[in-house]
Image 1 (cartoon, rainbow, N blue to C red):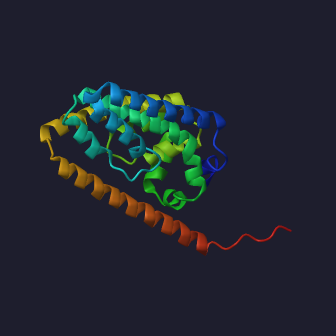
Image 2: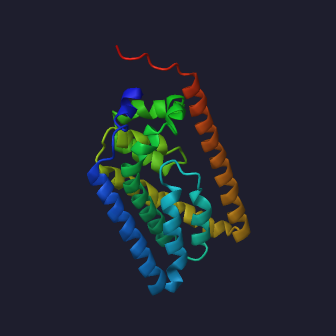
Length: 224
């Protein structure tokens, strides 16, 4: 696994970094234009903007409460498109950012001990596109497939295609379910906050474990 993650240790690919900056600018400008041009679509624009950080790196933000809130006022197909568009923007940003995230040892210990990451590593070499689709469609941790794709320089267009193929039907089905359930807005906010707190606790625990493990690691001998 160390060999797999070693490819993330260097500086971000300049092409990905430039593409990420351009994508971020286009996303923000486009969202701003739609926000003022289509007031009745503001819930979708808001969900699109929320979906970006909710799917960026290993986010502590839960996507489902925001999706269900958008599904209360917008057709499921449009909700699925807005959420998937946010995922695509997040994927492009991930290709530029996640190397720094791993290189600064924020999650390396967690990956070393992750059973899911070990399993994903075995399947990625055989069917990377299928692994990404399955991980993005089903309620499974998506970060192992994402980190493996970036570490092994899996082509970004194929990664984005796999995300679109999986996320649109997933979000569409969730939006349909959200329209059936019609959960109160307060309950959705409470669920989102609770899930964010749980995710934040997990991040804090991971950082603490990394620091403890780093403190126990003996210093390297001086070069002769």
